[in-house]
Structure formats: C-alpha cells, structure tokens
Length: 119
Image (cartoon, rainbow, N blue to C red):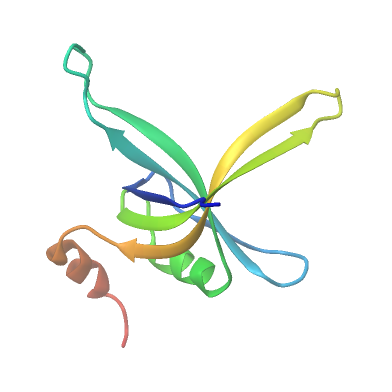
C-alpha cells in the first residue's frame, strides 16, 4: 500500500507548537495550495487548504522557522480523523502528517529571514 502526498504552498497562519502529555512536541499548521485556473472559468485562481502536523524535532523546527505567508514544500501521508460529538454527530477531517519539510521561496527571501538569526 502507498499513502504519500507532496504539497507546495503558503502558510495560512503562524504554526502552533504544543506538547503532548507525554512531552512530545507537536506543531500544527495549514497551507494553501494553488490550483490551476480552469480555462472556461472567469474567476481568479483557486486554492485547496490542508491541515498539517509535524512531530518531535521537526515540530520544533517548523515552529521556529515557519511564519504566515512562507512558502514550503512537504512530503507526508494523508490521515483521516473522525470523532463523535456529545450530540452523537460524527465529524470527519483530514490532515497531512509531515515526514519531510523543505523551505522554498527565493534565495533573497531566505537570506533576509536569516539576517536576524544569531549564529
């Protein structure tokens, strides 16, 4: 079986870093991935939005370096989540579990961001 997804897009908001009860870092963020404009459409470009989660050291790196608007590429697997609320209604969602994370964008953008980092 194969469950692998590769996405390139921009962060919709700053990532949220949390720690599980067991002390494991978990970083959640959402990216917007542009879709090609349909030839017969008069509307502007469209986008799909994906909820993503990174764990452990990768979560800490994501929380430290990613910001709203930053373009990234990631490789991961797609997971289905569901739960039943107090009223007995089932809710479904999907999320991408990040395996690999790449910083994209121009070299100039990346260098400007690194100017304030103490080495």
